[in-house]
Length: 98
Image 1: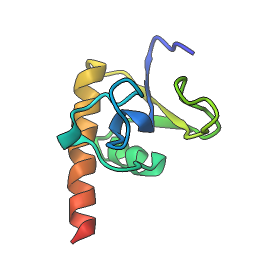
Image 2: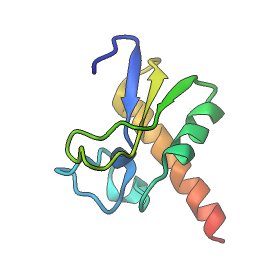
Image 3: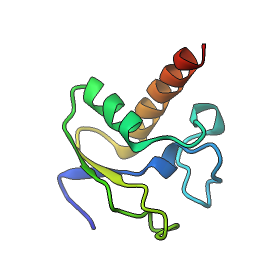
Image 4: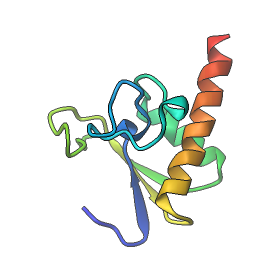
């Protein structure tokens, strides 16, 4: 499902319980346990970017788990965007844990 003008974001990219082989795209220090798709959506919207939630989608490495995915407008390199989202997720989780 390749969209030329969109970037696909999966929750597995930020999941600290997953290995790189299982789909994690950020270092462990930027990953969180069991990220929720709505948390990620909120972060993307805080950056002022538009995104579309596809709830019934399953990540290709675990197609039986329908975690959902986000289609967001492409504005910079995907890796850079993922790391920016990850940093914000860590901040949100650390504030809510206190």
